[in-house]
Image: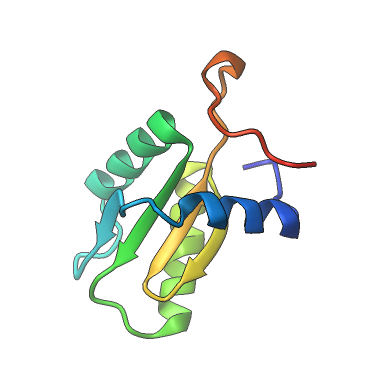
Length: 103
């Protein structure tokens, strides 16, 4: 995504994501086309989602997978909390945007 999030915006998004349930889970198969499609659909519907890592314990592995998912879905990483990544992608249609980021 062209847009980079500022620290205050990431913090705001993490706060919004607190009560969300994970929209997708990355298991032993890793990143599959089906997983990416699921994530893209969830981002289209709600702009902000959580992705849970089930089989991965190493922090670096989760970080690399999160960056790859973000790149391949045109999303921004709002944060990582434990085994959960928080992704944000602004809706392209201004009328359908649900989240207004602080500047």
